[in-house]
Image (cartoon, rainbow, N blue to C red; front, side):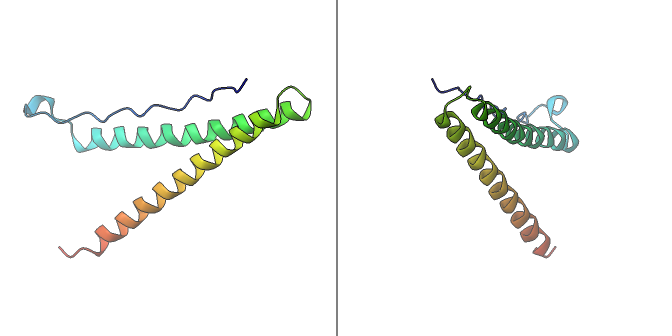
Length: 101
């Protein structure tokens, strides 16, 4: 049986309402975004740790090779997605810095 790996679910950012008392400040939005990024990176790290654990279990004969391969591919795809997101963020930052005010 294939072991299911739980993925972190994306939590939506707080929406800004029309009422001034309920508007989120830029600092709160930045903190929420940084928490989102931190959770995503922790999820990638957890997948990598899962691959190492499954590799160890495979070496002693407790799991099947297919479980190790699936976990490895999931971790690889997560890492590739993370690096692509990073590249897009850096590219957007560079584009903003090139803007003339």
